[in-house]
Length: 300
Image (cartoon, rainbow, N blue to C red; front, side, top):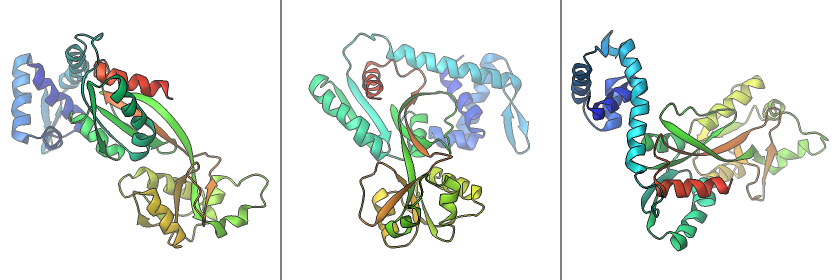
């Protein structure tokens, strides 16, 4: 059995269509079909069966895809773990969101420059879905991603996760609108807070649907659908839109205060952003990657 062909089968089980596999692996549907057909001949087992105009895995195909997950991870681990005691070296490719890069990765980069000069780090700024796609096709070694506790991310099999930190988020509104809550001994719950702004326009994220998912969830608890009028990836732009009276949106509670903006805490339920370090299964034994993950684990 050619283990390289297991990658095609594994991705088909994960992605669901040959077109999606071809896009992820940068090849053609014809190549995907040929490789899986050859794998079927090598195993002497039928791996695919017709499903309408497409195909699906047979029970044997699904079992082999499960084994492929383990086999491919073991092969990666074997390649990377030949000498775990060796001095870390090589170029580590990291993609992630800006906050994690600045607060978690940059201090480690400075430390490595002094203590482990043989380790180089290349940085790409990407939102979680973008970073995970790069990780899936082996274009990066480490993805720094986030989700919200009210909109948890599902990364699927083949990915190892280290939780880094979490931080509370609230609702950013003009300061004048926050005065109505000043006399409360206890802050209203999240649904009541959202209800007070039901007639406003709302600001989502242009590159991550998790923000909008949270906004719609909490709004539904208050009995309305938010008018999602604006999208912004930059928190600075979110603040500018709020100051201009164009809408309200989510902001981290620990963000430095900006004149004219108040961040109302969201409670019952709380809203927290959670940051993660994600790697392909079996890769964390590579000394350079293990070094960085170890530093991140110490800093939690």
